[in-house]
Image (cartoon, rainbow, N blue to C red; front, side):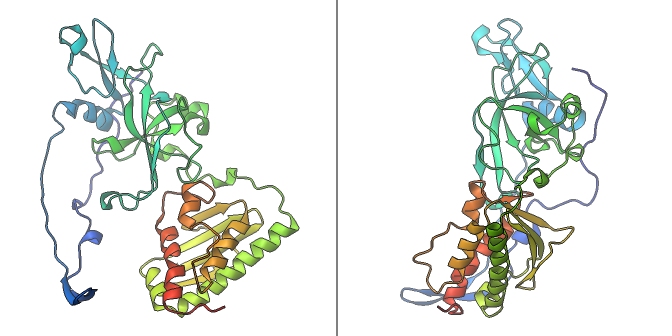
Length: 357
């Protein structure tokens, strides 16, 4: 594989703490109701810091960081090729020393990737994300004997079922700023790239167009779809009015600002979230922070009907989060926070008794 020299390395600039400031608890004591009385609860923290090396894997990670290439190990006798190079000696050949060998950045999925929606706090803000194993091609075009674990992404909104499956041809792309870790690279379906992008080595994240929801064509809307979309917009307005009367629902949206565009099979509108309020606009913002795309507006309308009813016992619609997980509601980028905040609102409205029949 051709190599053009050293590529971009770790970004220079202000150092970031391992624990983000947003995760640090604020000082204070609160009261909680326990079965046998009221307890005082103090915010506290316990930290365990550590350093560890990548050891023999360092060569593999330095190649990712400094050269934009993927390194494997091949046995000179049985020709077994492993990627990443997790062994230095071949157990099948009397532990002969394996030789380093660079592989191509194209390959196929070993199986359908796992999609993580509810992640540990360390991955907050990255969800939903997909993780799968990829067989990479050697210089002779044959696949590696082991599959490498890697993040998978899509240029067409959030990761969702149906984009990847066993055997899907993929291309590895490299983050523009790399530190020497597995998150420096990710896989993208070759079907979403141009021939020029597939041929480029290495291909960088900034050279790919992301959030291409414009490719989701809904066709000419019927009169019924247009009316349903109008009802969705009106019910979002009603939801915004109810939120303003509910301290709990206002708290659900507190400290969150977003301009959201909603694309449906019946039309487009927008709403904004700020200062604990939700405001609806007939026209979507030209530069929204988030785009929601759903072909059938009646699914959104069902959620809105359930959200503004006094009892949630007989809800007919799934949560918005469920619609995202199944790929019915598509976001233009991996940001689930807005959706999960909206899903908390209906319960808050009922707890504050602001919804009536």
